[in-house]
Length: 546
Image 1: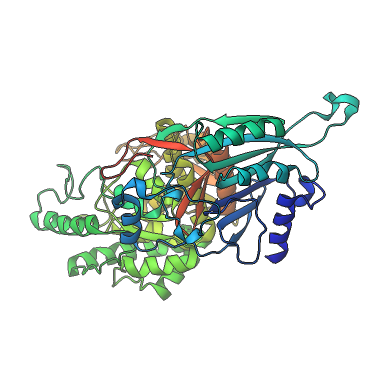
Image 2: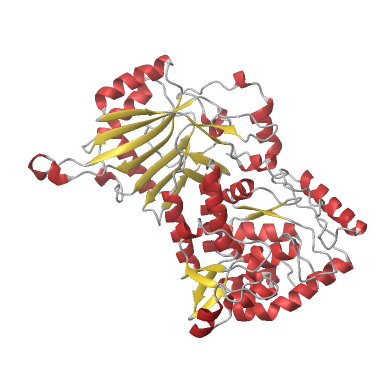
C-alpha cells in the first residue's frame, strides 16, 4: 500500500519517468475516485485526508486499493436521509481544499453540488500530469474523480514513424462553467493540454446513487402482492389473500439497514415448502451445476435450510453479506425491470416472502419464497454469480428503456434460465429452472441428434415445446431473444462456465452506449459515476432530481 501510494504521489509531482511508466500498465484503465474536501494534487501518506478508490487493470481484471480516511460512513439511514433531504441546500457550501474532510457530507457523493467533467489529452512526458493538476490547486477547484485511458494512434502516420504516446484524462470537479475560478482554470488548461473538452451534463433516467435510495423504489410494485388475477389458485381464498396482504405490509415498511423481521410461517405453508423440496432434491443432484450444489450445502449448514423449515430472510441475508457481500431486501410484489436491476448494482436482491397457494404446490404464476430461496438465493453464495448479477445491475443505471429491455432479456436467459457446461453435460444455474421440477428436466435432459432434429420447434397438445434449442451464451444474441412466461422456454443459452458467463456479460455491458461508467464502492455503499448527470426522468416520489 505504501509503495503504491508513493508511486501515485510521484505521478502527481513529476518525479516519475513518464505517464506510462508511472503505473503497472497505464495502457489499461486508471481511475481515482476521490470524495473529499481536498484537491487531488497533494502528497499522499499512509493515511491521506481523502477517501478514494484506485483501479487499474484491463476490462476483465481490476485491482483495487482503498485508502481509508475519516470520511463519515452513512450506514445509519436516518443520519444519511437527514443530511441529504432535510437540511436546506444552502447549508452545503462547496468545501475548501484547505478545509477538513470530515466536514463534507454525503451530498457530494450524490452530485447535489454543481459538478463539471472535462476531457484533457496529454502527451506522455515527465511531470505532464502534475503540471496540469497544479492549476486545480491554484484555483481552489476540488477534484472528485480522475480517470485515464490511452489514446489510440497510428505510429506510421506520424512524422518519421514515431509519435509520443498520449493519454485522455477524464476529470470531474466541483463547480460549473461560469464560476470565476472554473473559468480561470479552463483558460489555463487550454494552453497546457493537447485537447480540452467540457462534457455536457446529461439527462438520464433516475437511478439510486446510495444504497438507502433503494427505499424510494422498493415499493413501486407492479402489483401489491395481493392483486391476484382471476386465474390465480388463491383468487377466491380470502384467508390466503389476507396472509399475502400482511406480508406485503411488512415488506413495505422495511428500510435499508433495518433488521428483516421474522416471518412465522404456518403449518400449511411449511408443508407446501416441504412438498417442493422433496420434488426438487433428487433433480438438483442430477441437473444442478456444481456451484449450486456447493452453495446449497452452505445454506443447509449456516441458514437452516431443510424440508421441514422455511429459512428466514434475515439469517440468509446476514450469511450472504459475509460470503459475497450480497443482501436480501423484502419486497411486496413484482417491481419493474429497471428498479429490480438497479438493486443488483448494489448487490441487493429484492425478495418476496409469500408462498404459492397450497392447492397447487408445484405451480406458481409469480415468484414466491420457494422460487426465491430455492432457485435464486443459493447461487448468490457463489462469488462469480454474484459478480455476474452486479454487472447487469451496474449497466442498468441510467440506461435507456431500450437497453433496459436488452438487459432484462440477458437476465432472463441467464440468471433465470441459464445453463452451463459441466463434465460434458448441460447443468442449470438459472433460478427458474432450479425451482421448477418439470422445466429443469426438460432443459437438461440428454437427447439424441435425431430427437433434437425431429422435435425442435414443435409443440405438444398443451402448447409446450417438445425440445428446446440450445444456443451458446452470447449476451448480444440473448438481448434480442424474446421469451414466453407461461410455457417452457423454446431457447436456452449455454455458457462454458459461470466465469465465462460473467466475462462475456461484462464485455457486452462495456459495449452498450451507456450514459456513464458506474463503479460501486462497497465501503460507502455508493455508486460513483464518471460524468455529471441529471436524474430527471422517472424520479420516484420524495426524491429530488439531480
